[in-house]
Image (cartoon, rainbow, N blue to C red; front, side, top):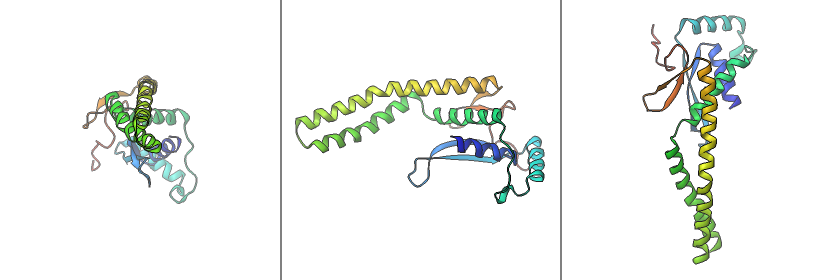
Length: 182
């Protein structure tokens, strides 16, 4: 999360803005992928021009603008909220139930065949399913913590085109929905 947040902050300094994050990148398909889009606002253009003038070698690995802790924390809150709000609790429970089946089957096959294998596989599945409410509670806690931080900073909730709850900056628009040709 720290790397994604820093990347989003630096991108904002050069005329871009964080738009979304999801899991599914990298060689194993389990890394996070972040969408950064051009920010057409006059404030972003002025900030980018100022930073390109002050840090001309930034694109070549040179010096970068210093991190502003408060802004970085807000970005972290947005990114974390987006990750934790991707699925509803019901969807998460169904994913956990489906994921617990192969784990239970693996345990059952390791033991062999027979009643003992079936009973142990069922016990493993039940144990994993007993942990699901704990996972859902932790996810709700994180989501509430970061939602409170965003609301305190003036961010408002909107529902994006896919039906997912998102927080938008005080200007009230989803990133990437400006007119890039203005």
